[in-house]
Image 1 (cartoon, rainbow, N blue to C red):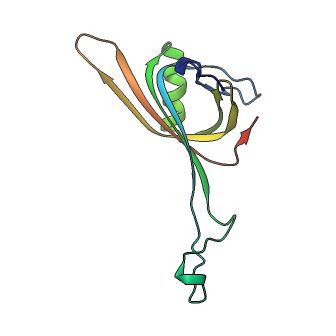
Image 2 (image 1 turned 45 degrees about the vertical axis):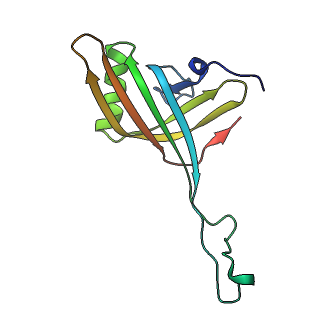
Amino acid sequence: MAAQKGRDLLLKVDTTGAGVYTTVLGLRANTLSFNAETVDATSQESAGAWRELLAGAGLKTANIKGQGIFKNAASDATVRGYFFNATIVNWQVIIPGFGTVTGPFQITALDYAGRHDGEVTFDLALESAGQLTFA
């Protein structure tokens, strides 16, 4: 796979619940992380006292972090509403040249910042809240 432009990594949300995804944020940087916890199945009988893991037993999670500017007052209100109401909605992360991750996420952090000589920016964190698909 050839190098991809970072600005093509997109974060979209299904604001209506109808499966139509809309970009609501003007992201300048974002990150998608996948995690898998392990379950230690080591016992006194483990060969050579090496740790053994129980396959398929741990929790899988994903988190998204983004920084940027809001596109307009409506997108700010949408995201702010999801945060203050602890709403879980479907989001998509489009990874250029690789695929699309889709599933339920909840906003777990929303920070606003601004400099006296610049625009208001935000930092956003989302945590997976169910099964994700990758297409």
